[in-house]
Image (cartoon, rainbow, N blue to C red):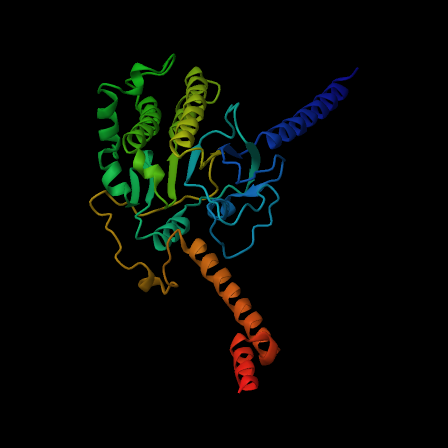
Length: 362
């Protein structure tokens, strides 16, 4: 066989290998995984892709809120009208397209991985349940980005926010360094400490919720949004084939699995926990940071945005009681009026019957 023929065969094999690689990576791309979900929030198993820009609408629908545009996605079915989860927890993991999460409700491929945030959902929660002061926590430890509203100001005020605070927390008693198998990860490398600090934040959130269990028993839904980018830094520094990246991926998968189970149990099996894994976002996301002291309560959130009147969690119950009571009273008035109109005073009324007898006797 000539040299030209060998080169042609090599080209054909390389093209075929590239096509197979593209198909394989297309199957194992960015994903949305539902770790925990109550029975009345029905996620259907399937390979229906969901767009990254629709994640906030999906979170709003799972919490029972309305959205501006209908979400024509068969993965989520309509649930009961008078039941909604007590909390929704969304964890965004950057630097990996998928995690080995064995116990999950459903998993869907993620299309168009553009940056997104849950600001609209947080505004809806706070405007509808301002009197109950729900917990709204949005946190990105790598960017030192924090946004809190409601009871989160008092409960999570001890949560380490900056990387310096988190690294100081790692040296204290009860840190994850004492319980996690680090293997190839180092306690002195910056990228490794960033990843471990994010794991520490997850551990501290569940610890604070266990300490303040009354948060999970009120009537206002809570919202948590966490963004983790430690794996992205490890991938950039060591590479995806490095033992540090593989060990960190295994650690994060087990930590997220336990984190979802703990939050789900703390909220009485009435919480939705989602994990979004994305290799890289297609565009940078900028967001204004807010510290704990700068997060102020809004006395009247309806007036600046020209919102409708506020109602609490019992609005649907009170509305149904008033509605059906009015219908019952209206039917009662109609029946009584019909009977009075068709009544014969001589036979149906005891007053006229007594009067007729008295007249006859006289």
